[in-house]
Length: 589
Image (cartoon, rainbow, N blue to C red; front, side, top):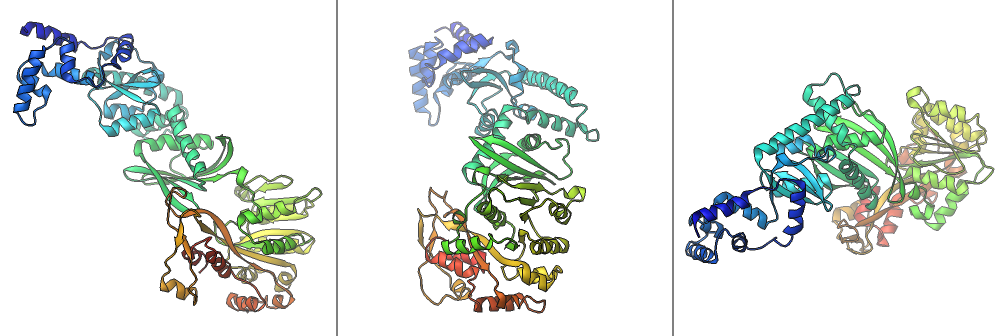
């Protein structure tokens, strides 16, 4: 083969594709070219002969570690640049003349400016649901995965001359940034520097684009699928952590690139109708959306941190909001006792426990149990978590001076039969609640105490008269939520001597604990249930409602009166294998 003829053939190979039509034709035909041996491709293109290939193979076999392409270049049979383009063709990666391509702005906007500039990549066209990306060289696996993540579609790489590519990137993205600035000039903050202004504008734009919209929706879908109560977006120095609170435990979900944080937070702010330009002050908002046939009520809290804005979203699913007592985990005999309490004409019923112990869920179960036509039920909540039928629910307006006591005064003029007060926080609310219970109203509320007996000294500390408390209090329900063992993988639990000693366990009863499996995603727990204690004071116990009696002394009197405490209930659940003893110790000790 003459050298001149070989160079002509190689020049043919080097000719890049000139238009979108050429590229489409190539991609259609290239499916049959993929994974052909490089030698066969060279012979097919007429660059070398079979004799040339045999000679190169002899050189390759005689030189340890030499690749066939290197042998061809060493013998002068193939130019190195032509060989590189043939290798790209072998991988289905053609070269294009990017100067001849007309790229729509809508496609350009699907990749952030910063990502395109930093990685020297840009979209060229869409082909059979695949986005074709121009790059100066084959990108690494990490960049490739980021492209797929941003575009939410399969990606195909084509090679463009580097200087031309960088010029087109600058040309297109400079124009887009100018348009963004013109569109958002009035809304953009006036006091930030130029770089921060550019990033803000880009984040505002990206927040409305399909990839970011789909990305944020995927967070909610994953949280819904995994039964999460809260979604956390936590910025760190080098990345962003996404975590879900499931069954009371915060579990890492995935890690995002840092450059996605502004767009993700902006998208959430848009949904929650918050100020997208404010990034230095905390903000709270609400999102109501329908996802996969479920209506979700999301409470959003955004807090600035040194590494960006931290977002926590509480997920409230109205379809699973109101539960009956048996769904919460109450025994039949205790449900009958609670049912008797909440059907009084008047009096005060309290639910106590720490934050996140299911107090509001229990109050809703009580209201649903007594709800009927002809009963005027009014709730005062901060915030209204779930909307219940046949009730008037009032949202506090604390910012306008309407807290629990101010709102309660107005509610008492609304002719209520039953009043639910979200929480007794101060002396004025406590006294008004007791007075309402004494004047013909049935009052439900919550109190932050660790036990049922602890509610008595707490109300007395808030200034409630002992005599009024004796007359008005019907009962106190204290509860916690414990994680249930996964029924698919529970096995005998090893108990440490310290836990046995602390829980005063003299017997050797077998206990069980989930070990982790596919059903419970390897955590050993599946769902939560309540452990609780119910204080129903009789006339004898009411006589001990005095400021001089401590909570411990009151517990001793209640036990002597036959009261079963929360730890007793937890141990009974552990002996049935429903929960682990370690979980009971964590929640009740």
